[in-house]
Length: 101
Image (cartoon, rainbow, N blue to C red; front, side, top):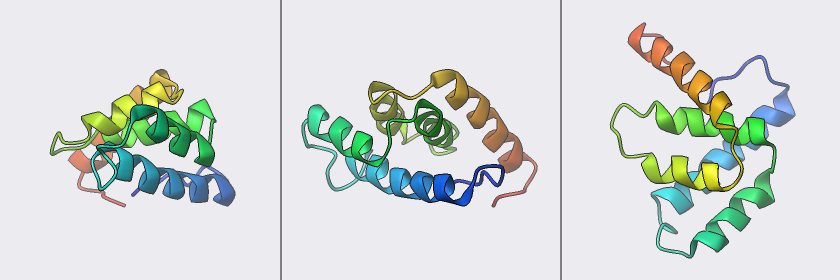
């Protein structure tokens, strides 16, 4: 789940959609599909580097370490990886503080 209350609702909705698509193509049922197809599916949701970066940050902060393919997909799709690192640090801080949203 992505918790970014500072974003307008329509962008949070895009993040929710992006989360589903990236998960499906990164580690889910469509993980064996061609990379070009996966990138096209992600870009059909958004090409915004900030939103892609926020979602990559969520994947980077995965405490189970299984979301590497999602990070790589979002990076290949144009994620701002500086945003990803910043958001991952924020998510990790929330997880370590026991505040999971």
